[in-house]
Amino acid sequence: MRIIRMTAAALALGAGPALAAQDTITLGMQLEPPNLDPTGGAAAAIDEVTYANIFEGLTRFAADGAIIPGLARSWDISEDGLTYTFHLAPGVTFHDGTAMDAGDVKFSLDRARAEDSTNAQKALFAGIADVAVIDPLTVRITLSAPDGGFAFKMAWGDAVIVAPESAETNAAAPVGTGPFKLARWVQGDRIELERHPDYWGAAPALSKATFRFISDPNAAFAAMMAGDVDAFPVFPAPETLEQFKADPRFTVIVGSTEGETVLAMNNKQKPLDDVRVRAAVAHAINRQDIIDGAMFGYGTPIGTHFAPHNPDYIDLTGISAYDPEKSKALLKAAGVSDLTLRMALPPPTYARRGGEIIAAQLREIGITTEITNMEWAQWLEQAFRGKDFDLTIVSHTEPMDIGIYARPDYYFQYDDLGFQALLALLDNTSAPEARSGLLKAAQGKIAMDYVNGYLFQLAKTGVANAKIKGLWENAPTQANDLTGVTWEE
Image 1 (tube, rainbow, N blue to C red):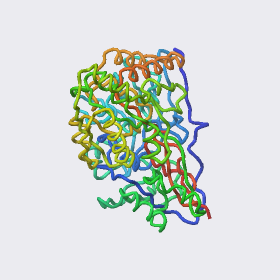
Image 2 (image 1 turned 90 degrees about the vertical axis):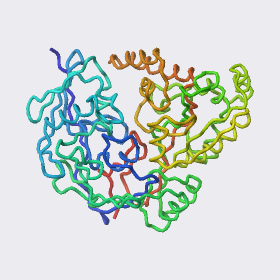
Image 3 (image 1 turned 180 degrees about the vertical axis):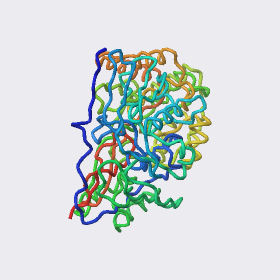
Image 4 (image 1 turned 135 degrees about the vertical axis):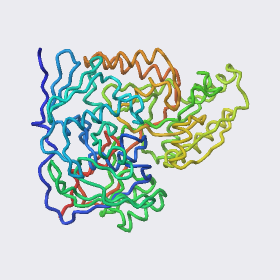
C-alpha cells in the first residue's frame, strides 16, 4: 500500500513568545457566547472565544486559511483515501492535568457522530465509519468513502478534542488542551482567560486575555477611544472607521471573512415554497444599497453561498440581479398579492440595519414585512432551531459551508435531491479538478433555485491599539486566535 505522508516540520505555529511591554489584552465582542462548548452550540461567538485558545483539534486553520497540524503533528492517508492515521503530539494534558491521548480522540469523534449528538455540525463526522486506538499517540480513522476534505473538516471548532471527564460540563466550565484556560466568566459583561502554565506547545506571549461584550455600536466606539478595550476584531460601527484611520493611536484592520450574509427564506413556508416567490424577493434586493447603507461600503456582493476569495468561486450575482419589475411579474405569475412576511432579525449590525433597508425594498414590489428584533438566544431558539420565521438575515461564518444546503432539516429547509446527490459526489471525490467542478455546479444550483437572497460577503473590519501585533487580518474561521498576539515595546 502506498502511503501519503503529511508532516508538521515546515508548519510550526511559531517560536516562543517575544518580549513585550505588556502581556495582557482586552478584546471587544458584540455578542456574548451562549455557552463555551464549541461541540454543543451553533453560535459563532463560542469559537470567537475558544478556538485555538481554550480548545484544539487534530488539525487547525492558520491565519491564511491553510490547514496545519494541531494536536496531530502528522497524519498518513492510505492510497484508497479511506484511512487517516493521526500521530498525536506527546505530553499533551488537559487544563485539569489529565493526559490527552488517542482514547480522548476516539471519545470526541464517536460522541460527535453519535445518533444522539447535539453537535451543531454533525454532518462533518457523517463519513466516519470507525475510530480505532492503535496506541496512546496513534489513532486510525476509517471513512465509509474517500473524502478529500477530511483534514479540513477536522479543523472546525466543532471537531475539537474533549475529555470524557469534563465533556458534559464544558458549556460553563470548559476544559481543553489550549494555551489559555478559563479564569472567570461574568455573564453579561466579560470572559477572562489566563495562560495555561503547563501548555504542551509554545507558550503565548499574553498572560491574560479579557473578552468584553459590548453590543451597542456607540458604546463600542466610546470604549475604544477611551482605551477601555485594546482591540475590537469585528468592530460593529463601520461608519466610524475613518476616524480611527486618522488617529495614530489605532490600526484599522480590514480583511475578508467566511461570512456569507444572506436573507434566509423558509423554503417550506407558503408562499416561499414557490421558487417564483423566492425569486421575486431576491430580484427586489439592491445589494449595493445594503452594503452602503448598513455596512458603509464594507462588503462584497455575492450571488450564491460561497466566499469570493475561494479559488472555486464564480460570480453569480447576475442570476438574482436587482430588477423590481421582474419581481412584480413573478409575484403575479405565482398568483400572490398583498403578501406579508415575518422578518426575524438577530442583534448584529448588518442584520438590524440591513433588515430595515430590505423591508423598504420589498415594499416597492408590494410585500409588507413585520420585523421582530430578537436577542441571540431567542433567534437561535425560534428561527434556527424552531424554524418559525419567513425571512431572516444572518452571516454564515463557518468555512466553506455550502454543504448545509444538503441538509433538509437545516433552518431554511431546502430539500432538493439533486443538490444532495451533488454534495454526496463531492464528499466522495478527491481529485482537485473534479472537486472544483462540483463546487461550481453546487453554487449554480442554489443560485438558480433562489434558496436564499444572497447579499454580501462580510468584511472583517477591526480596530486595534497600534502597538498590538498578530491579530488575524482575515477570518478563515470564526476565531480570535491569541496564540501569536504580542505588544510592541
